[in-house]
Image (tube, rainbow, N blue to C red; front, side):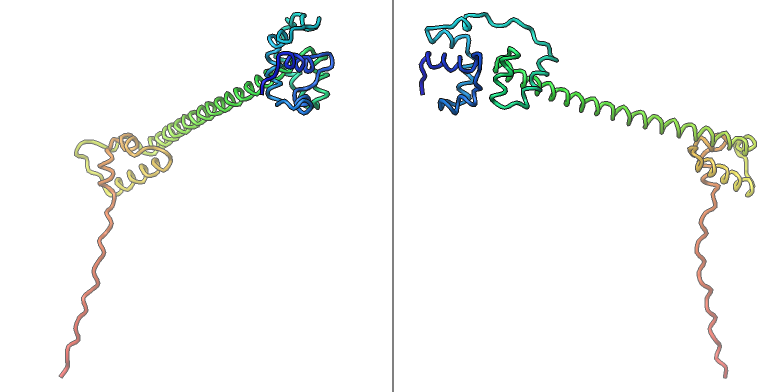
Length: 227
């Protein structure tokens, strides 16, 4: 449906006059879609000239006031709890156009979305940083445990037990294996523990007692027949 420029200008004056009517309330009154009325209101600088007549209020230049972010947020928050009738009076009192309020609401929502995304991104970065620190802490704890285990092994070992071609008695092999196992259980790696005693891990492994093979059951002696 087409509307005359005069009708559009009249609707704009109804929505922006001294006692403004909201676009929603005016839509019910004149049977024009609210979205259409809001669009006319946003186009008010051009719609006003279509009616062929402008009041003194229409000729006044638009306000050049620069609204800060805090002021915009205050207006948006206050307007959110008002009814349509109260909203018109409030906007008139504040000197705010309805189209400005819509724009500020959109800006506020966009700012909240951006803030949430940044917060999530920051939380993800912090989680990665914490995991990296925990991994480094575990590595250092293992290193400290190995150092302590090797120092204890050095004290108990009594010096270099190795040497090319050296043969160890059964008691020495048992002592070496017991000391190495104790150091490994305390946090040392097998190879450094063996090297501290002047041995290789192959030598220590070869000195471990092998699992004895299972013995077979004794053969039964058949009974001799007596005559």
